[in-house]
Amino acid sequence: MAMKENANKCTIYVGGLDDQVDEKVLHAAFIPFGEIVEIQIPPDPASHNQHRGFGFVEFEEETDAQASIDNMHLSELYGKVIKVNLARPMRIKEGSLRAGNY
Image 1 (cartoon, rainbow, N blue to C red):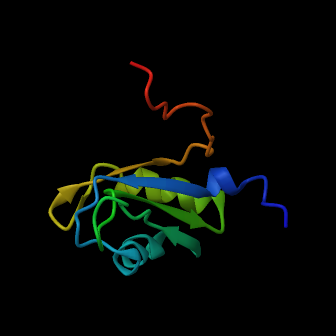
Image 2 (tube, rainbow, N blue to C red; image 1 turned 45 degrees about the horizontal axis):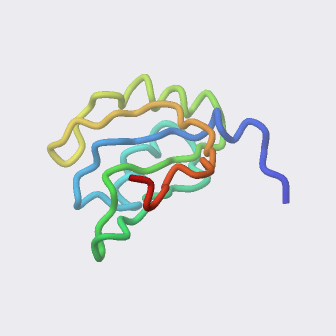
């Protein structure tokens, strides 16, 4: 299954999330800007039931993603100022976690 070429332009990064924020909270915060395709909040592997303080929201339309950035960047969500930017394409970095190289 091929991904849409414009998926990166439709996906936003949301950083600075409070521990209480989940997918439902992000959906409620960003649905006013347009149809949402997917929401992801990566879990923190070091702790149970916690996330790493950021998430991604993919919109159906690029203009909706841009509108959410324009309106939500540096706004407050659950008492914390959030950063909202266009998500960068995911790249897997070879050798970025090197063990034993002292």
